[in-house]
Image 1 (spheres, helix red, strand yellow):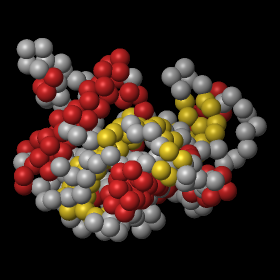
Image 2 (spheres, helix red, strand yellow):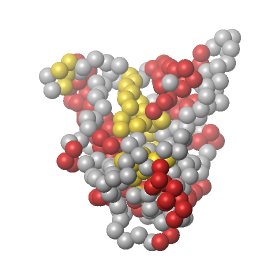
Image 3 (cartoon, one colour):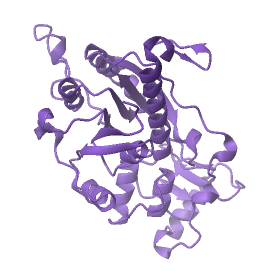
Image 4 (cartoon, one colour):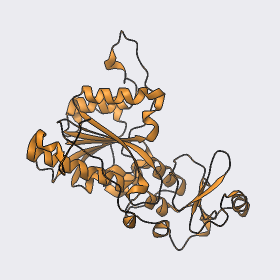
Length: 327
């Protein structure tokens, strides 16, 4: 297999951000699953197919064969069953178990999983320890890294952990940050003509401006209100959040970002269709991934797989004249 074309399964698909990233690397989606009805509506409008529903009700053997498994899975507490039940039962009842059972049945060559940054510290580090050990027990070589969306061309500070695995001993390096002059500024993504409906109540605006740390901060800026009530301006958006107040982030302390601007903060293409109301798009953007980050990871994964196919394990371990350490 030369990896110029490959098949992938898109689990916990959301509105398709991970799918877009892997399609940019030559991939073809052969299966998608998403339980949220609103997310399915946006996904179907843009990809012309409706994801299958609840992954817990889908048999692994009914999923078409694929080469790479993808999933931005929810982070849940792991219920540790007593020693008498054994280590293999540690993931029962969690959504990670769905990934594990599909990997076990389908044995794809690779996978990429995405989650919140603090997954590694969740439950005192126990959650990630279990995840990684179960992936390794399936025979996968596992790599992980926290990447920031700011480093990949969009004006949003969003740190997420990405977990990449290979069935063979493939050497892999996560993508490096792109040069500063290739990154989009806030001005590049803000719309010029804005409807009045996005502007906040004057009382909210006055309250924000009174509490802003730097009253002479240059426009455009985006400020967010922290737990203590402080207003901090930045030349980029703070992390989009699915459940935050509509006034969590404001542009110039005047208005909410538009639906298109939120999609741009996540690196979605201009052609991406908006078919639902503001509140639902806000939630979907907050739950999604930054497409350019995923795209960069996908391309590095394919390069690593191609190199392994061409040169085998020994030479795959050497990139640009440097010996790599396996995870």
